[in-house]
Image 1 (cartoon, rainbow, N blue to C red):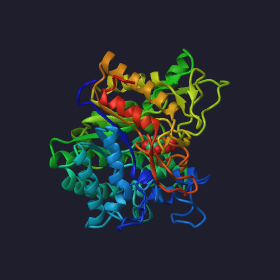
Image 2 (image 1 turned 90 degrees about the horizontal axis):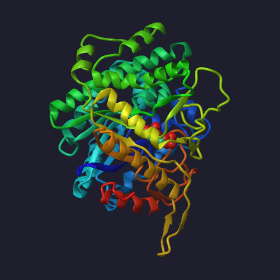
Image 3 (image 1 turned 90 degrees about the vertical axis):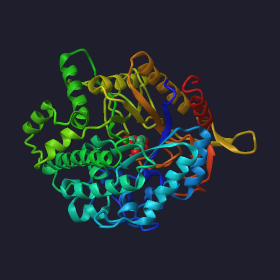
Image 4 (image 1 turned 45 degrees about the vertical axis):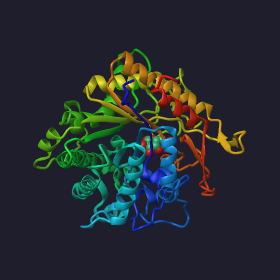
Length: 476
Ligand code: BGP
């Protein structure tokens, strides 16, 4: 691996930061998505209220309290040897309602403090501008991203971030997993689904607005700092055909295109022909306005980031295969793969395949910004008077995936700038809201019901990854 390869870990404000009503922060869509059986209903926009309710528990309100632990956490990240820290900005910390003229200085101060700590330790921040969050005021007043006015509010956010933080941040990402709008429209775009017959149209309208906003952000960031790198971010994972039957091959191609569609626009600067034809067939209008085409064309991404947890499988014919559970991307269960306790299938070679597919298609530098195993952890005595977690399964998952990544780079020639595991430290699961589905290399004493001291403990994987980074991926 190249000497300057950015090894690190990833996080998201709404799953990690907490402090949801402190120092002027406003309420966001993510704050009203509860834990429990109603979570999916909310994440997909099928709720009947945009208010907080005493009947629910909201994990994002505390997350794992990075807001109050950022110094301690960054010290631990430094001890782990992290070269890169992927984090996101809570939009409502900067603009509590989203449509104010002036930003909330206390929110800006918080991120500046975080960036200063990163600088102190020589950790490169990689900043996602929005990771599933949107001010609730913008949803209540304007209907979220289906309203074109959102581009203006996002533009204002980006301008402030660029002006205030360009000296700290070189790597930016515009929208986390932009294709998630199609699966979790409330989480991804603040869409409330009131009329099912308009759902697809609303989703593609919101997607167009996010794509234009993403190009706009790229333009602004480049104007303010020509040295910075602006990337797009996709929930990736190649879809395999179930058999060599051409019908299956065709279906897999279509499923992969559904995902690439977003990157096609962001990397090439125009809507792909197959996408235009498909939307036309579905009777969906893309709300192009004057100047959109040029903006998309002139402001393509500098690099491509993506999350990879698993590959997917599809079949044109009826099969006996069951579908996977727990993952918003329901897919057929691949009999050749094992799965996590939450039903997410484990496919390291699929990671190499996905890296190659994306690189072949775009020939742009890649950055893997999420990859990891959600598993239950148990605190046990470490034999030195403290506590740890013996998370061998997580180590095994990461080892195999890093091995695949190295093959993609060293044997296949994929240009990869860095790799950040999901997550650095335990955080709330986006799909389930659980704490018990843990991804971190650092354990946080916090339970599904909100109990716990929030104390941090280094897991076995912490020391393992420390060595991986120290040896630049040699010692796995
Ligand atoms: C991605 C999200 C993350 C993260 C991860 C793991 O889709 O970008 O926010 O949470 O998936 O998923 P989960 O937390 O649902 O297990």
